[in-house]
Length: 100
Image (tube, rainbow, N blue to C red; front, side, top):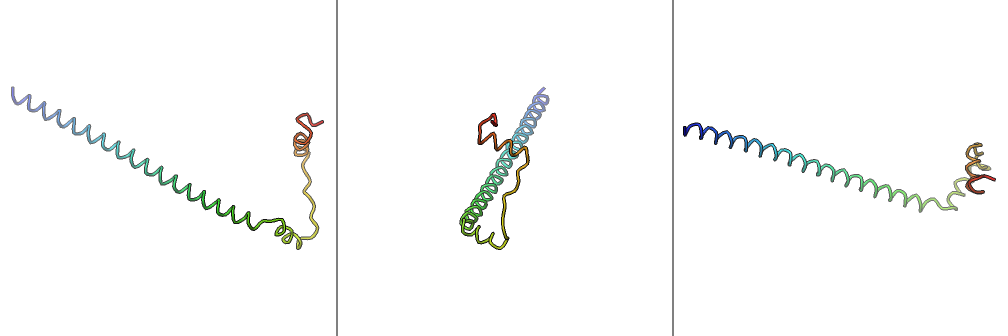
């Protein structure tokens, strides 16, 4: 009779050990996922900062005087014609929603 109890106890310890190992694996995967998410967010933030640096540099370079000097060599400039649909939208904005 003592042998059966011993086998049951060993079985219970093995099942508990396998369950604990499974839980540790799940926990480790969650930690790795959070770490990957953090790295991705840091990468996106760095890209955002670089984009803002580029925008700031462009804003410094694109002044009305610079645009005029760049366009002088292009010859006479004229506005692009709007499509009828764009004209209707612009009329709505300028004259109100009715376009009257």
